[in-house]
Each structure stands twice: as C-alpha cells, then as structure tokens.
Image 1 (cartoon, rainbow, N blue to C red):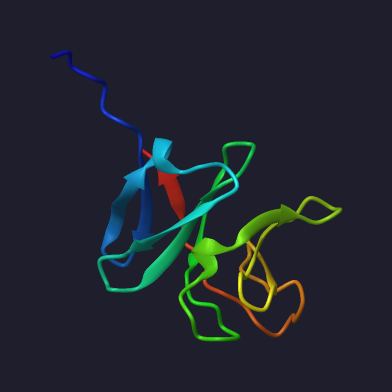
Image 2 (image 1 turned 90 degrees about the vertical axis):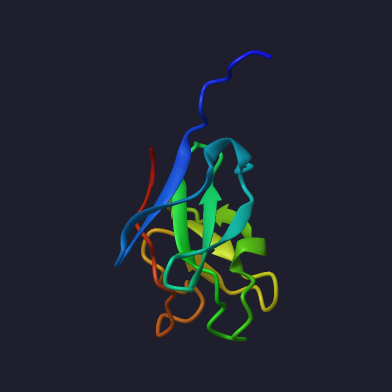
Length: 115
C-alpha cells in the first residue's frame, strides 16, 4: 500500500469559523454539491470552469426547495457567473447572491476557500 497526499479541502465560513465541507477534487467544474453547515443550514458549493469556488444558500427563495446545488452554472455577457435554479430557472449571481431575474430577491453568499 502506498501513501497518498491528502486532498485539498474546501471550507466555508460560518459563525463557528471555517468548516471543511468536501474535497476540492470531488467538485466537478460546472456542477454543484449540497453541504450541511455546523449550524444546520445547507449551502450549495460550485467550482466553475476557471477553477474558482463559490458558495450560496442551497434554498431556492422562489419555491422554498433546497435545490440550488442541482442548478446549472452559466455566465452573462458581462461575465457574471450565476447558477440557474433547476425548478423555475431564476438565475442567482454567485458573487453577490442577487437574482438576475428579480432584483428584489437574493440568496446568501458564503465565504469559501481551499485549504
């Protein structure tokens, strides 16, 4: 048996500090994963094609369903990266949480890093 290097972790910041949520290598570019935070909330973590990490609340504010991690990533003509909800297709900016289709609606954005 050979020793393997430890994987790079993805961590999210919450009130409890930085918490490991998954291995970076398990994040497929363009797809998301749902993670459970220490306070019981869910977040959706994404890795884009440029290898940047993003994290937002997993709850779709239009339906109340915890599905944003299943959404598709895209970008606007001016380069804003978003996730489109798999249910009603509203798009949420992954840097600001702003709904690009209804400016009065947002999702929380979480600080994310590799460690």
